[in-house]
Amino acid sequence: MLDEGLQLSESIEGADLVVINTCAFIDVAREESIATILDAAEAKRPSARLVVTGCLAERYGSELAQELPEVDLVAGFGVDFISEQSASQRPTSSGPVSLGTVITRRSRTTSTERSSAGSGSYRSAHVGDIELSLPAMDLLNLPRRTTTSPWAYVKVAEGCDKACGFCAIPSFRGVQVSRPMEAIVEEARALAIEEVVLVAQDLANYGRDLYGKSRLLDLYREVSSVVPWVRLLYLYPSELTPALIAEMAASEVPYFDLSLQHVSRSLLRRMRRFGSGSIFLERIAAIRALRPEATFRSNFILGYPGETEADHRELVSFIEEAELDWVGFFTYSQEEGTYAAGLDGVVDRGLALERLNELTEIQDRITQRKRSALIGDRLSVLVERKGVARSFREAPEIDGNILVDPSLVVGSRCEVVVDACSGIDLLAH
Ligand code: SF4
Image (cartoon, rainbow, N blue to C red; front, side, top):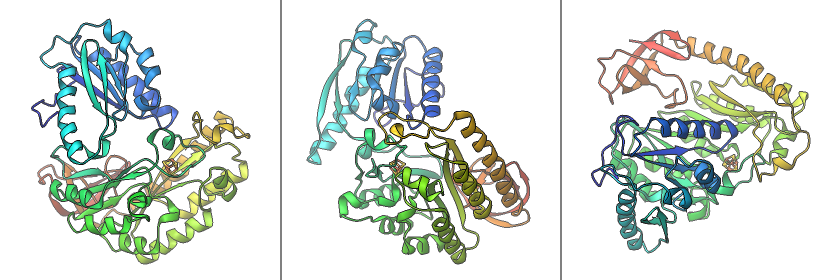
């Protein structure tokens, strides 16, 4: 749309078209998505069109279209769910940009691209009297917008072949579809930025569908040859091979985001996942032996069906011993159609919250101690926006920041000395 001359509005109030990208992973994400849609519906101009897309739209498209008449179009991953009845009762947009024009123009471009690639399937749909032609699946191949930020996410695959007990993602994202390596490397090169964050639902499995085996290590090497900092987010621990560990540990970004979820062996099996606390501790120690300052992030689910007090104590001991830098704790969210939804041993929500609070307190102290230990150190940072920088230790958007002199040039990499901590942020000069 930007390529075709539309302009990004600074505010919802000033926009002719408002697009809300949603998340449907767990209950809190869905609640936040719905709240955002309702806020946008209220804030937008009456003539502006409101489109809801993303995972919530994919997973609950028809329900959303039914329940939210204020939404003009509910569009999943290129497969449309149209609120036809409510749309036909609504006048066509009288604003300077009509949604139909936007989407029809966009899909023509996509149609040419995909037919030249020898694939593509399209569906016709209507919003009121506007005919739309939507690509059936084009998420991975959309041309991307040039970024003004010195870092960007690059999606390398969509979908997941695993079947973790709590997770509904494979049911609506489908099996893994990886992008060809050359396309990813080309995108990373064209971005011409300082940091690329490679993401996928199951990043460590990248390429298995295309190449018959995981090619994450090759991809990592290739992207590292065109971008100074390459960060890998959300690595399933079983596929963290010694070769990948060695390469990451020797890199400028020895940052390990390991998706552990729990440490009790029996509970992990109930989650239909790999590993145990002792295996994870060994891997972490092996990484630290290679690179003592390596940074670790992980996330854990509390109150999964069958989680006993003993399982919880095991997790508490692990958290105290592992001394990870950043950790996200989440209470279990029962997801329709998942294996875990049929399990017995449901944990009381209050107890799950108690466990979450206990672990959060312990981890906050660890994180704080690790942040304070950096006072006086000289760090190499990337200035990501005015007055805000990050070192390899902080992933964008989820970890802390380093507050620096606002006169430092955005996009530059420089050395700073840490003076103090402010919560999880560092102050440096
Ligand atoms: S690896 Fe497990 S948790 Fe992650 S997307 Fe796949 S099924 Fe879900």
